[in-house]
Amino acid sequence: MSKPIVAIVGKPNVGKSTFFNYIIGSRISIVEDTPGVTRDRVYGQSNWRGRDFTLIDTGGIEPESEDIILSQMRDQANIAIQIADVIIFLTDIKQGVTAADKEIAIMLKKSKKPVILVCNKADEFGTNVDTNIYEFYNLGLGDPYAISAANAKGIGDLLDAVYDLFPQNDENEDENNIIKVAIIGKPNVGKSSLVNKILGENRVIVSDIAGTTRDAIDSEFKNEFGKYMLIDTAGIRRKSKVDEKIEKYSVARTMLAIERSDVCLMMIDANEGVTDQDAKIAGEAHEAGKGVIIVVNKWDEYEKQTGTLEKYEKEVYAKLSYLSYAPIIFISAKTGQRVNKLFELINMVANNNALRVSTSVLNQVLNEAIALVQPPTDKGRRLKVLYITQASTKPPTFVIFVNSKKLFHFSYQRYIVNQLRKEFGLEGTPVRIIVREKEDK
Picture 1: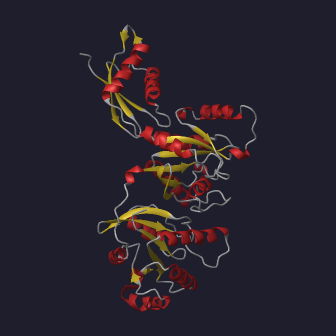
Picture 2 (picture 1 turned 90 degrees about the vertical axis):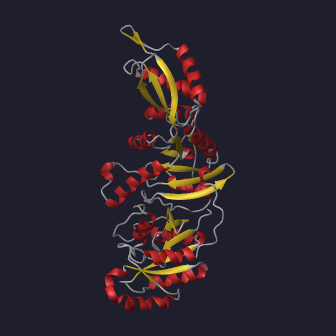
Picture 3 (picture 1 turned 60 degrees about the vertical axis):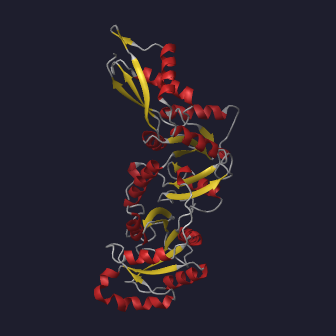
């Protein structure tokens, strides 16, 4: 990425997520008084003094911990440090310098990256801040900045210091060509494993503990097929199981990830088939008007016979009838089977979702469709379909003018949509129809 990258690191519960959310301007990271809540890296975009930059919020570093999740959080923070241009080392002035702070300071010095030492929660000391901040000089990271992330004090001076450490501004790459892909599905279907297989590194924590990925995480990359941003989302649980505030945040953020995306990869566990929860999640992507690809994962584990794939496809479409337009691909995130073929599908679906057709061509197709199948009549009055125009893209939305809305039955609307799909190959994207009445002059 051409924009500068700033990573926020520090031990758990020093206010990293609160600071991150203030800079980004929204509640992207989970904020809770439970240490270790932010598990994975979370990316956000911000701007200071006219310069765009990417901010990464990391899981808290526990240098000596052997716990599987905490050790992987440490690994994730290390990756953030490696790719960052500037590192903000956040500490808690109330706690003073701890053994963990000293270990993290050593790690940051070894990285050879520009580091800014920040003492958070300074507002609670009033005029005694200077006295309490003195011991942080012992970390050997220069002058500490005293701030309050919760009350937005001292943030401007800190951002000025960050700005001064940015690398020289290169020409930004054109981000309009980046396809945003949200990987959605219920917990433990292999979303994070797919991200890791695509990126070729442990970019997202992978564990057999369902619900490990709580935050939606953005990973930009490019390959021979194009430029992409992968958004790995927290698995959506059934509402009855969403009894923690943390999980509620994750569900809401998954919905936001769908909204931000161009294409959604709807992942299904081959061994479980389509569940009610899968149908609900897929419905969210459909209602949001996003391009959708149905990705059946763990296909390597599924027992197969002659005709198994075709039979499985029929069962999927029977349970997800509203996604009849979505292509299905059978993969194994674990072995990499057919993972590369995803990109051709993603490109096709993204292009179809953004397709714009001229009014003259649309009306030619409409007239041919009407000639092929005459509009219906009701009590001697015939529906007249006057003309069609495209209102918007993402998804393709068409306005059809008729002499009577009541006569334009759903079945004939579906016929017109199918003809548009047949002519323009709108695979993978919903198609919206807006019906307007107009006098036939």
